[in-house]
Length: 288
Ligand SMILES: [Zn+2]
Image (tube, rainbow, N blue to C red):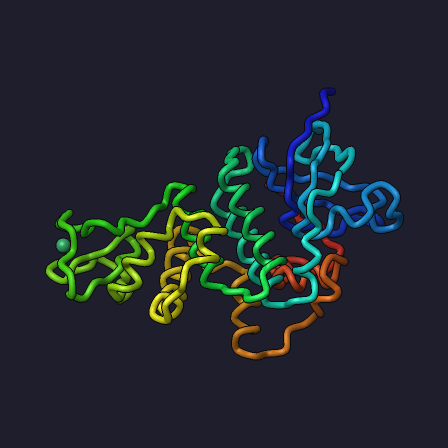
């Protein structure tokens, strides 16, 4: 059978049998896929550490008969090693990769979404002043790419541009702002003018551009609720990875250490205890 090649990022992995691992990738050219890496936990010969969480590789595989492809090889593009000793950055990488997985169907090819994910991981591992606001803005960009772009220019009820110096709210279920004269239909989040302006300017910006934007305190504060509410609404439930992040932000001591990231235990915990609750270590969760 024909061999396929694409840039790919490891979204998650689960142990399978004694020495194998099922690895799920977002590929740039073929959507999402999962493959069985045989013997990967016993020998580093074939894949080395290249199938660790969030590794960016050039992946070669052959389609399989069932849901799993046959992984042939992985050439490292970026291991994102800078992430691995920093729990908050790892937690955010977990949030972002889960968001990618939840927003796109396995056969949905979206190179733009892949590039945003790759940019978030590169940003997260390389910047000195890590700013979750930048990642939240990139998350809204990702939602836009998935077809859930918030309407920020006109009121979603009366279709008029909102008056200046009047209070605005973001109506989550209607997907945009509601002016002071209209009544929101569902959950509405107060929005300052500064945040509205900043969002309108930054929602399509690249990570490089965002890293240069001066983020005002109102934006940082309000974007927390906006991101959470938008993601929960469109995904249908809170992300599992965001629970781990919430523990971190609350100052709890989470299980697992960032330095263990990439091995199966650290990887599972650090990727936000992500799927850790659905099955014990070693249990495979196949794509359905
Ligand atoms: Zn209105």
